[in-house]
Amino acid sequence: MPLIDLLVTAGEKYASRIAVVHADTEYTYAQLDSASARIAAGLAERGVVPGQAVGVLAARGWWRCAAVLGVWRAGAAVVALDPGLPAQRLARITGAAGVRLALTDGGSPAVGLGPEVTVLAAGELAVATGPDPAPDVTGPVAYVVATSGSTGTPKCVAVPPVVLEDLAAWHLDAWDRPEPPRTVHAASVGFDVGFQELVATWAAGATLVVADDVTRRDPFLLAALLERYDIARAFLPVASLHALAVAVPVTGHRLPALREVVVAGERLVVNEEVRALFAGLDATLVNQYGPSETHVVTEYRLPADPAVWPAHPALGGPVAGAGPTRLREGILGPFEEGEEAELVVTGRCLAAGYLGDERLTEERFRELPYVTGGTRRGYLTGDLVRLENGLLHFVGRIDDQLKVRGYRVEPGEIEAVLSAVPGVRRAAVVGHGVGRTTALHAYVVPAAEDGAHEDGAHRLDTATLRAACAAALPDYMVPARFVVVPELPLTANGKIARRELPGTARTGTARAGTAGADRG
Image 1: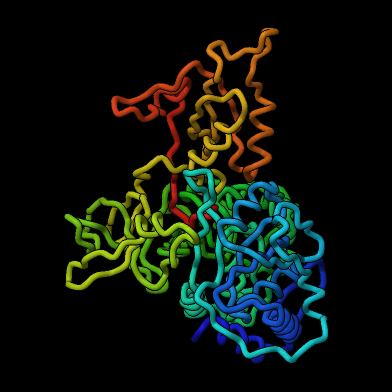
Image 2: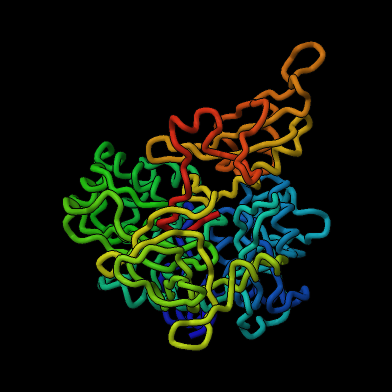
């Protein structure tokens, strides 16, 4: 069933049920249906057509929920805009995605969108008088999320509605509990897991409980919310799972309603705290994997006994019709037992490509010959995986991409910002493993030979470099450390020898561990 038909039908079927809980206020499916229909009508009245990109600049909450569904009902694409991003970053995203109209929640200032973007409040649009809501339309793109780009410009991944249709249907089939999966809405804005939270919950006629930014970042507050609202399902980054596993025994919260915890964003590491947490829960831990360009590709449901869980669980098997394949001598085919290769994803889960970047789309999304004949469109993930006992396992990255706090980071985007700082001649950014996290270290070469002003003060101070990054990048992309070096070491081919940078040999350069959905 098309995505809009699926969600509108659910709204009619479950009209009296609670669809969203935000700030202790409950909103029914009937209210969600009415508000989103009015928003769709208002967008159409203002000339929005199917396929057009509409920005949604709002924090998680009731009006963002209604706005997302309203944009979909108008056949337009939701461009996820996080109000917490620097104005420069927002401008780059809206420019790359071609946004000319944006909806806000009324409380998020539209700073950085530019004069060419018309800004409307979703709440005002929903209550405005006007023509009756137009028929719902299915557009070619459901949502657009920005990921880090090596050129300094974000890559805007355009995902068609069929991806969410298949994922919603798959979640409905996979949920084997009698009660609807009351779900916490805690994914950060711009994280594609947030759209999974919406459709998986609403398709089931369940309740979506919104966690504010303070609560979702504080494991003690999050534990209290999970218990208070009888949350049955939570989608969490790996780091949040680890923090929650420490907080729950301290707070004494028991989480009796929790039945499923889905983790993604980076490689899942199971420690003793996680094992102890699930030993006291009637819940399944699920490891999901998928870049932004494919949403969810595989999942692995860990066995009932946490004592036997490995430190690094498998990526698992395919989800919702995704096709994990590999290239051998230029031909696509399934993995053979024990085979290790770059993962190439095929199937209906693929994004349409990158908005405004046909060259990169053609480079990463390729029509390739298949072993049994014909061709299939595949996305080259850059992830090295191995098939063991019928399950895929993450091995590593084949490029320099990094994962920081669950977000994919292209070092080149940070390097582009640093290179634009007066006094910087060249920059390199690497990831250093610190425990279970990755810390970004930036190495900069000053423009002047001695790197100093005439008065002897150093030209490049940490505060200046940090401020330049904070003004243009999200906080997870701001390096934790800045090091001024006279030159960057190079390989024989003239590339930066990142492993030879000062301090790298001691800690090791961390590569992307993408054993979870990519969110950046």
